[in-house]
Length: 363
Image (cartoon, rainbow, N blue to C red; front, side):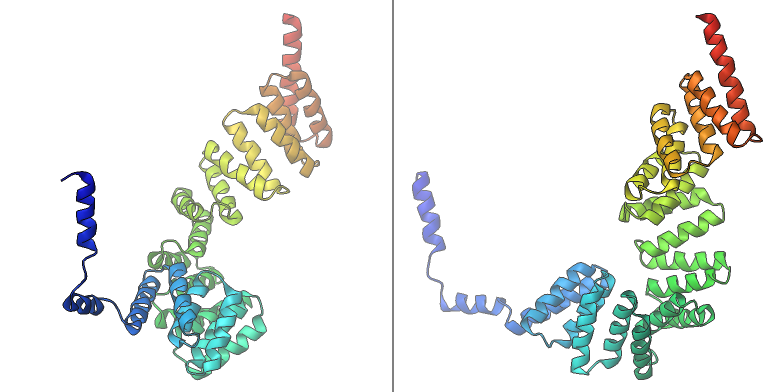
């Protein structure tokens, strides 16, 4: 049998008319519309449980496309939208939940959540209080309440609300994070650190907890412990200005200038008018011996702050290291005139003048 005959034989076999028994068997294997919906719902729930918020939202949206009054899908979508920070859409879904009036407490809690994140605090407080009147054991409402109280700087109340939230929702990292912030405001950094570590255990990628944990470790001087936390946070959000700033501070303290230079360079891109960013970028360049580039960065630093004698002295020192002694002496003289009692400026002026004359004698 040649290849054409083989192909024909396969096609003939595949196009054979199925028997009645085969048709019935195939129909039994195909899900009914109800079974298909149940499978979608199960998949959506699995995504929620695995914290795959975006995928969960997509499946719940698919369910709502088939039935826009599916209350379970509305609640699931609201939960997903909250976690992916889509608060304007969350507000709309919360309103739809409230239209059905079957889950008013949850609808009000989601509405309060959206309003809080949209910085409509008075409306958020009213909606959340209404939710708690209907259900005093609703975890999200207590998380909302503690968050609102923190934003309004009502710290004793926030601590009590966050403690209640962790009792009702021990598996929700946001409850622990709120308690951590409340404890920080009572100057209990070690206890707060424990709360943020607990939040991170529940969600290793909870960016806010990573940030707060980094800040506390920095304040406690535990720079080596802070660094891996910061690196993890930056792997999640490489352009986060707060975390980049923490990273620069930690790397400078650890004298890891090459890595510090890279983070500071990113900061100069994101915050081009930041003196902190340019100064640390310059110091990172000096730390790895890139003096020409450091000199250019120093010019930018001096554009931002012309009155700081330290920066003029650093420019003189950088010129000195580049063996541009005449320029170094001139800049150092300017620094001395600015502040005659600043010893580093006087020293670099003296060294530069001495090297000028030594070079002149040699020539």
